[in-house]
Length: 261
Image (cartoon, rainbow, N blue to C red; front, side, top):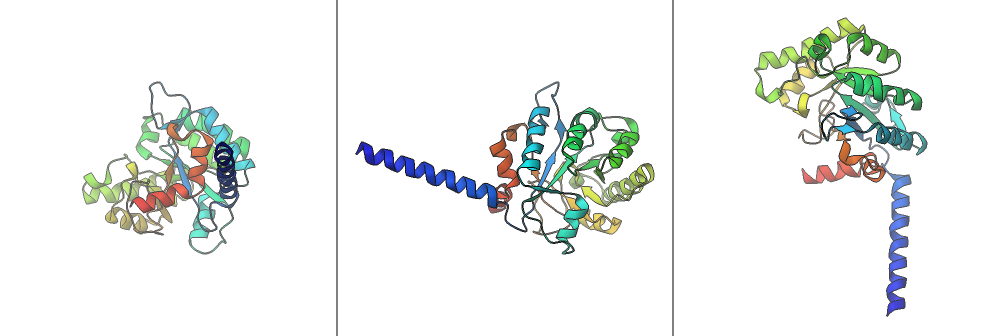
């Protein structure tokens, strides 16, 4: 009986190892492109799940760089979504919200440059204007653009879109685009909903304002394949180990989330 148990254990372990190996090399399946989003990289003054350590972040980018993944820019991702570009195998998109100064510009950006990967960062206009919430300055944002970073809008004041007047909502979306374009000298074509709060009215304004795409968080509910409600998987302190990170870039995380909805 003991020999049978040992044999069965070995067979089970072998099946699990082979399955994981196949999953690693085959996922995500063609056409499935996970979009990841970070908030902050570094060591916080107070414990926060929104932070990913500098060491873990570099390990994750190295995993993508040398693990056979193709990191797409938002322009490339948009081309795939609109049928103008064939979906690459094992593709992924990297985004940041809030455009932090020391967390993104001083900590994350040098690592991003090291691995030569395209990323996008969504900027809150008022924070950059007034230097609040440790935001990047407009000067730093212009320098980041020269380094290959795509800057998108994250509104003017970062309000909850389901708690503000429709006129204020429209202004947050339209004016943030206009003001950022004026300050940065580039066309701002992508939007990230503050707090991930998606509403049909907000999506209509985003489309009307001339943005190409808009991004939500995993908690937002919207129609599948909607260019103005593209889901993302959050990377935080709870997903620093590489298996958890792989689970997000494999597409399994998004598939499981869809089943729950």
